[in-house]
Length: 289
Image 1: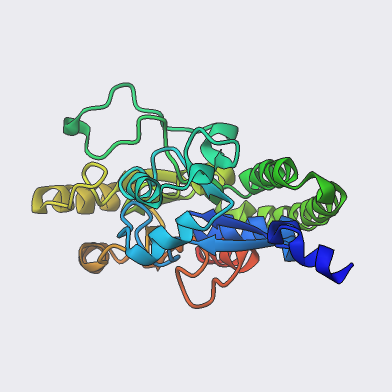
Image 2: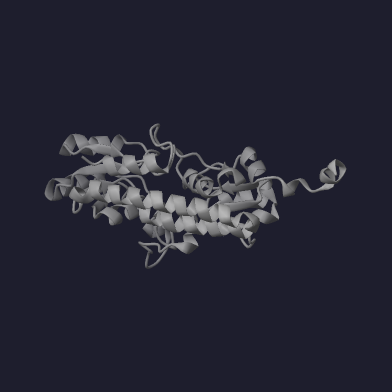
């Protein structure tokens, strides 16, 4: 009997090895997959999600994966396709059944009317930062559950139970965050880059301008001066700033307008105290005073 077991393929006993593009996807996958799934996160939370260097170590991780989950919406367009190509793993090819594009399962906002270089670095499918709406997290969790079941049907009941537990917990958190953010509805904000579009929409914040004159374009002196004037006229509460761009211009604007600059993490690990999905949204919903 022992000899027969040794002859069986190791994959019968191994966990699924799933590569994911960003930490929040890894956390969701682990919440549903638990000890049945090994998650390999390709990008770090404090990196600019648009630009990740396709290092050899990342190629190896993709090459050894049983499947790949990406954010999509062309957020990874500059770095993930080269990784997939160089890894040459049929399980992570975009047409494989073991490849999952999360953006195909949510309603994306801010889709541009036209796309050309004059508009900056636009995402033609819409704003890709959809995970920052906590309601979308539930949609994504369900999609990942179905994905894992499609790869590992024998553990369907296990994944279903974990999803239900996550769903119940997350709905309670959403109710708490809605209560916490209720008094913030209608506040005007400035952003550096419009990566908080879904968060702002979910909680009724009005983004009146970005420090970037166009997506991906650094602020000019002329644009900065116009922002200062706008802030003095419309009196937004604060500047919501990502963690991966320099805050130099934001700090200058703050010194001229007396509104605070608030760092807003976009993913798990963006700041030291955002180590999981709950603490990420706890921070985001508690940052604006």
